[in-house]
Structure formats: structure tokens, C-alpha cells
Image 1: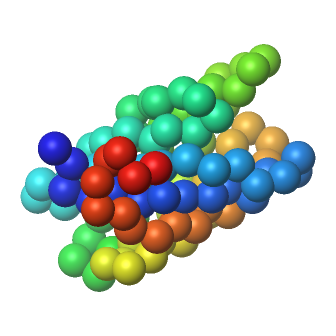
Image 2: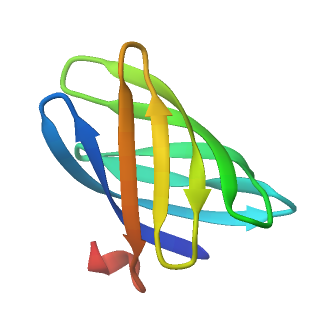
Length: 103
């Protein structure tokens, strides 16, 4: 069971993509998974007591696997991340949901 679950959307050059981010935090370490483009991939990083975070992971598209590093802030009722991939920067925003089955 994940401690934090968010419905997310990512702004891309070809339009908005929808997904979810689920994670838990222990001693400032963030571990979880991001479900985007019908692929669920692990994410990890750090987060401080004010919600500032640095997260790394991968986004799998139909033609390639894009590694990213995201920085931003996660609040109790929203999140905003800026994810830098190979060529682009993607803005990711989200709102919490209660059950994993809600997304």
C-alpha cells in the first residue's frame, strides 16, 4: 500500500498525457512508481520536510525509453514537477486520490 497517490498530467510537445504517481517516503527517501503511457516504471529520489523534491525515473514511449530527472514541490493537495528528459522539459502537475483504483 502506498502512502501517497496522485493523478498526474504531463505537458508534452504532442499534447497532455495522463497518468499516476504513487510513492512512499522514509527518512527523506522517496520510492514509488509512475504510470504513464500505459507503462508503470519505478521512481526514486529525495524529499524534504517542505515538499521540495528531486526524483529520477523513466518514461517508456512507443519508440524509446526516456530517462528523466524531476525537481519541484509536492504538497498535501497538489504537486508540481519540472522533468528534464533527453531533449525536452516536461511540466507535471497532479492532485491526490484516495484509492489506487481511482485512476
